[in-house]
Image (tube, rainbow, N blue to C red):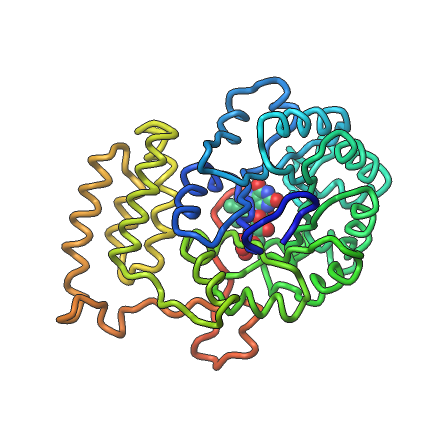
Length: 369
Ligand SMILES: Cc1cc2nc3c(=O)[nH]c(=O)nc-3n(C[C@H](O)[C@H](O)[C@H](O)COP(=O)(O)O)c2cc1C
């Protein structure tokens, strides 16, 4: 897998998730394995040039957090160019341009999905960035605005012509939000539209089988995983093993899930401080808990933590309470085990009882990402 001059050890990518894909989350996943190029949340190019402390926090990194892509948004060509140059000098590995975000704050400045509708302007802006740096510039988009405006293939072809090194595409339209099935034909159309650059498919990949299915059905060169990594930061490693050997590693044990959640929590405190780290972790812990089996009291209390001590005491009480659902080997009794994960686009191939609905989306403007 190669993005222009950048050689990568994995064709699996962490999709940007504003509010979540920060340094602690990336380090946690990297330590487990299977991931090479990770990304930051989206960040405003102008804020970086203005040295805005909040924007700097969004791109905080360290030597273990390599290779790293910074995702930029913005509609002013000079700002996008200068931010890319600055990030290259800082030592980042690539810049990804956000062309999928429909949130007004982003579109208002000509960034995000506004870029999908203005091909010539977008091409000019991107060319200015590509010409100013040596590292790869990539772009992330949705399939288009709605089903009657599937613009991604045209956009991808245009971007390849101006020198973009790879395309990430979420297989839904802006109108779909996160509803409905990921459109594998739509991703295939983007793959067919470009000449040589890799296209990375994205959307609802929650299992190793789903990653292989997306690659086989669309011809994409790799997959991006977002919410699937919330549930399961092990997904990159297990998917890499599965793609290489066909072997499906068992899901991580409960003890391993707790170990990794604790590490993630400790890093949140290290990077954001105890109070802010705890506030942010209130949104993260319930995603881990989705694979714990019964977890009501944990979820109820973990969204109130304000300190390391609070977190520890929630965890101790939860471990106690959960013991009632275990058999003599310390495993969850069968009827308390969580259902297997299944991607929306694989439902048709499965018996009814294991089909699943949409992956939850955190509340807020991200509902339309
Ligand atoms: C909470 C949240 C935040 C997101 N933030 C971004 C972002 O900053 N930039 C971006 O290009 N896409 C963003 N997305 C879209 C994801 O990168 C991804 O395309 C989408 O979630 C589908 O993949 P998944 O099903 O693997 O999550 C976000 C999605 C969610 C749910």
